[in-house]
Length: 289
Length: 207
Ligand code: SF4
Image 1 (tube, each protein chain N blue to C red):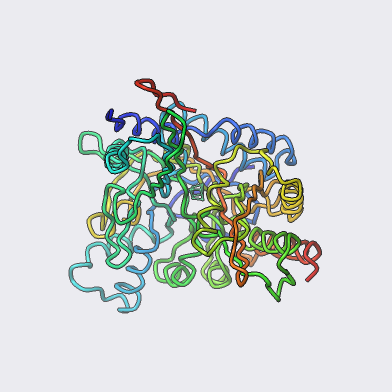
Image 2 (cartoon, each protein chain N blue to C red):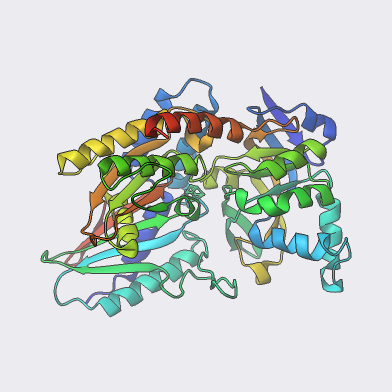
């Protein structure tokens, strides 16, 4: 099995220092949409200038380089233990190179491990698949936006939200309203319907790997994605909460089976610094997307 | 028009600022977030300005530099070249976590501005009015751009104890861009946007 440590370091560098193309485009579109000279437009301009500088200087777009979340798809025969060790090593190197900020803190003592490794840190999920390539998706999930994520158990009486898609709409809008600009709006919402509490949150984060504009195959869920996106933007929270037309850039929803007794809706909020990239290993060749 | 602010900032300069104003800040400021705020309140303020001996020198320094000074809610990415620290990415972090500490720190040190993101609550807004201070909102996530405005890392305090993101970084900035979102006249863009969006939310959800 080949050593992919350096390839992982490069994946981390690209993810931390350069926004994916769909995000940059969405921010540019949003900029045209906001009132000229408004604080909202000013904020989007700052984001775009920052993005260009970061790419050029190869520096983290945002100083909160977040929780690195690796989704590793691998063919039969690869060692997940070896891959995990290489990923951890790459995270240590990337931290030394300042592509990542030391972000792993011992919850009890408060001590920072200094190299972004710790218990369940970074997050690594393995998925064996039938393809003959290894694909690694990486997301850097910042703390500010993670903190405004929310999980609801339906029915929810105060929001008059029942166990149906109308109920889902209401609680997701509630999450956006509560978040205000705190998650560094404009954000992207990943929503999971169903599952247990743990699976539900994890699946909501999976949605954030979907390209912007990607719609669920289920026409009802696709329509709900559109509706929530539109209505969230009617709230007028705007970039950074300065007020404005752009509060979310997209909403992506999918569902899991659930227990008859439970109906969870989980919302993961991703900030404008939506750092996610993929790398594909085909034999000796490594490509990045 | 862009208001230029230089540390130490006068009460008059603060009074001239209103929500929505754009500012560019220059001078020596300190980063401080959760650990640093808790520390200042526990060691300096709750002791009535009599910190334990080990903390005295830092207290004296902060008393001097924060008088008319600025705290920045930021946990930077830093690098060290030839023994000299450099800011690599330095956008703001969420400010509301310091709500329970901020008014005490503003009062105790005669702080004139707090920079962060997301805005703060009623306690801080009240302190901005009483002690003449403002809340400046930087663009969250604009880590590289703001780091470019950091001319020099003069010193770092409590690095070993708190770690890189939480330490007190003493930095000299030039033309640090931000928007006034809470002023010394009782206005807050955050409260305004929250109220408007709440009304719309109620209409959309039917509650
Ligand atoms: S929410 Fe995102 S952009 Fe904002 S500080 Fe955190 S990681 Fe950076």
